[in-house]
Image (cartoon, rainbow, N blue to C red):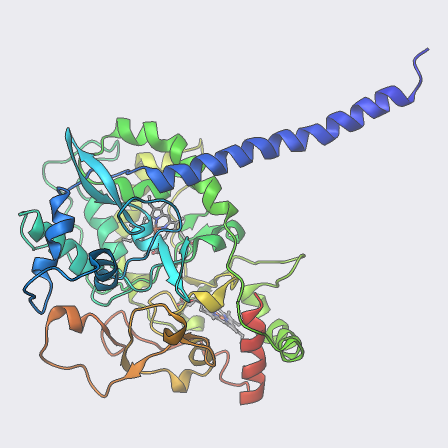
Length: 448
Ligand code: HEC
Ligand code: HEC
């Protein structure tokens, strides 16, 4: 008779091997996703290589010759960052690609989703420096296509009109993604002013985007960025596997740790205050973390309502009829929600400016609404000197009013919270704390 322990041992070994196998395939998907993001272009290349070399000719104010150390001057001019992986001569967010048979340069996800803090670049940190309006205008001109963009890409550096981009790109499609001759005449707004959420937060979320309007596990939803008219349904179907891998990689990302000393005792006081005042919306942290993935009704949160109301209902209806909503039998439908999602706060020290519209430059000002600056500018650089360690966020220079004149490049460096979509009101949950309590909560937030 076989000793009884053999089957038990076999079962044990087998049981141990199953999760190991699953992990190996997860790990492979993560590796493939990272590689796809770091090496592949998913949209055609609209510009010839020479556009990168020549684009400085369109910089304002005009200059006589290309700046020395061109790569660095270029990054600084547009708010791009050195890639933390090998990206040839280009900054993170740009890469070689193809337009039909022609080679040229194009952009990738990290144009917006590759940021820098304390001089260090991270894939998945929102790019809070990018001048996406100037970038596309200048490259179009350098490529001889003409400066005019089909809609506003951004009014302020570090933010984008991603909502209008989605409306515009979907408007050329039928639900089966075939191209329409007459595009849908949905309203193209220029006041939805969006800050880019950090990718490392996605793993905790059940719903995503600022209003929580999409299932956070939808792969097709994040393929919307590929919607330039040159990409056919066949291309979308072919690339879905790559985007599943990209999603696996995004879900594996971790927030960077606060690199300066933290007062542990003060942070512990802050943790208790956080549990009492903040955790019901933002969750709890540490090993046994919880996250409620809650959307807070507009009336209760009170932050700027423009983005919430700004996307046409027709777009949501169209999306739900289209290929995007059909990735599984019951679909991942776009949902109408009541307000804005309270995000997880992991790595929040690194993700200024705050709120869905990037209207508040520091954590201190999030927690003390009366001190939020009305009109301000900043360097849009990311070194230690540009970081406000005390208030935690960006150093800003306050202005009395928005200058009436001046070049567009400089005007986009000014955040004017009196403009539509850029309001800094609401979320007054920190106002009742006294200064000492507020300091303690900020100390705790540094540890997340
Ligand atoms: C033009 C800038 C831009 C580009 C390029 C871009 N994104 Fe985004 N992304 C955004 C903005 C802005 C949001 C927030 C949108 C919202 O909530 O309305 C966002 C949201 C997301 C989210 C949801 C995050 C969350 O927690 O809610 C994911 C995931 C994402 N993008 C993935 C991608 C991928 C993958 C690519 C490349 C294929 C990409 N994005 C390209 C700007 C961009
Ligand atoms: C009733 C729910 C609720 C409570 C209570 C609450 N928050 Fe929030 N919080 C939100 C929502 C919703 C947002 C997003 C608002 C927006 O983007 O318009 C937010 C945004 C934030 C942000 C900005 C995040 C980012 O990346 O832009 C920080 C920081 C923050 N909250 C900290 C706190 C702290 C600290 C407390 C406790 C003192 C707190 N919150 C209490 C709902 C809440």
